[in-house]
Image 1: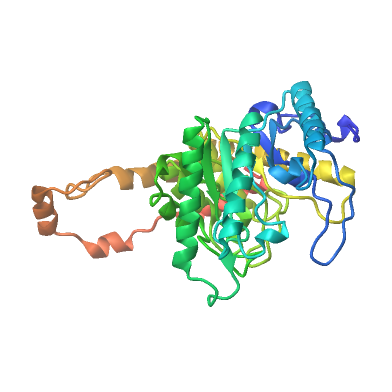
Image 2: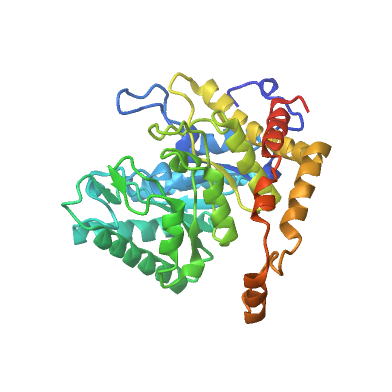
Length: 400
């Protein structure tokens, strides 16, 4: 590794493969290029990225097809790259849990991929995706993510939302059938984003995606891949999107990063912004015992050289583990437990026959309609949320 291992402490917060932290090849491989500036770092081979991340304690890497195989690679180049990549995976024990297709970089997708007004572009997008699915399965992926970066509009004059959504549905139905026909062990995860690079992207939030899934031919194969930045860009609470996906049994993958609300898609180091939001996200995943990958979709500041890239990657994983430790402190804190027990008792003690899991029946409805509630008494009682939030803040600040 290009950095000294002493730079990264091997304490209880150090990332380990059993934490199931994964990275996209496009994340640490990001050269720092942006719309206003050229690259500031040299490209890294996929094999190098695998070896470096393995030394940091990661579990695996994920990829778009073009992250690994250049768009215009010859058959011989493809075979060589695949051979070197598989060799690095074998050498390190790293896995490829997820794969996806780049349907946004090439000029052919300037107007969309699955939702393009050009039937030829839609056909090419399906071909490219089928080939990418084959590659992902060959590498061991069991989850396939779809982010429709170009599936949107700048002007509503060009197409209706109905046409865009219908075309996206047709593509998903075609591809789920392709997976079933080939007997691949693969599930799909749809990733929402409100805008950028298009002015407006179809199905802009996780909630939109969840509703869309149930219109598909094989909804059991399809879930969501929420991303911190994509929900926080419009000012939404990310943990609510993740919670809805968990409650529906549709959290198939997740993208972790940092973001300032109202900004462009920043893809910052995880927990570098909104530490309280990051804490509640970690708490949600850990309390649910979610068994998926903790995937980081982010990149180092443009200011950084290669050493800074590995600092960024290590710190992202370390921050997750620090917040996981804070979750344990939250659950163990006696004052917090006292407040939560009181709230639980208020929420589980039946009133007029209404409690957790209530279901309608005629007798209960009659009883409930006749019950004399003391609305004044119910409305006068506080909930202790100010105290609870301050105690949570003190846990995060390390004084409890």
